[in-house]
Length: 162
Image (cartoon, rainbow, N blue to C red; front, side):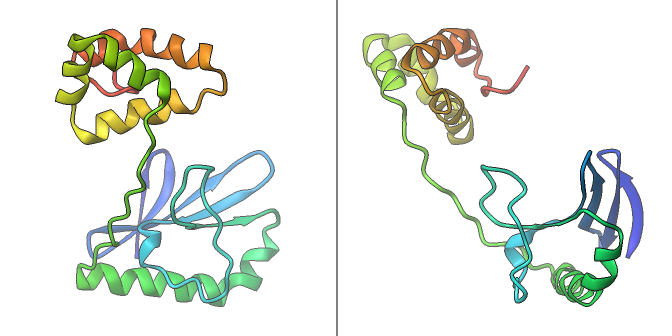
């Protein structure tokens, strides 16, 4: 593998594809595998990278010695991904449906211009709004987010775009 720096972290590449990335945090360091949907987690050691991750793809370490213990597993998983990189294999596309929050549905029902602008967005941008608005616990917060996003929707941008 070739070592480079991407996203300010050591990143390992093979056959022109990102394979893995090392990252240090306050209490641990992590080996994150790229395209984890291609991995067969035979040892059951992979964790999701965050609460919204669809596929587990990270090994978390709290002590340097753990890497020696995990070396055979790490080598096997890297080997799997290197073989996929050489073969040009892509991970299967997974798309979970995000339910439209009631407040957004109501806002689109009462404001035809907003509805037209929202439905003109790409499906990914629509999902970004449904996800972001739906993450709010309270209805008042969801309504406030709809108002905050109004101009972005009309501008054709996604929830997190500037």
